[in-house]
Length: 168
Image (cartoon, rainbow, N blue to C red; front, top):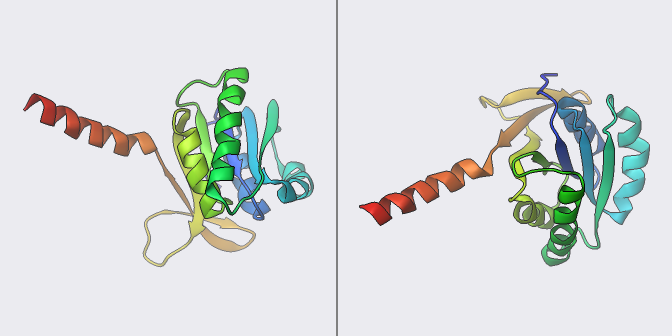
């Protein structure tokens, strides 16, 4: 497993893929950890994720979505809880990494919007594809790929284009 330097805060979306969550947590070694999950996933985290964490975070918490299949309820849960949690944990802009691997489409959209002011990197674990130059990893004997990016990179390109239009 390739390791990254430890990070300040990690927000993991999870519904049913415990091995992927464990991999991400052990790879990034967050100081602070939050799970974004439906109520039904709490027992999975407690039984299949927490016991396998190599370095326990200093603090961890939950943001529970009332309905993982609905965007608005997921967004409301994340948008209402995340700013206070980041303030309490003293997490500054850019110090949060978001893992969308275990998210439903509604959860992924909700987290992407709610976490944007705080995040510097979004990670996912995807299916390996032949000929791909993505970073290959193995989880439970299955070939996967580690994907990551900074949403601000794309936003900066658009802002740069708009600034050029204003001055030209």
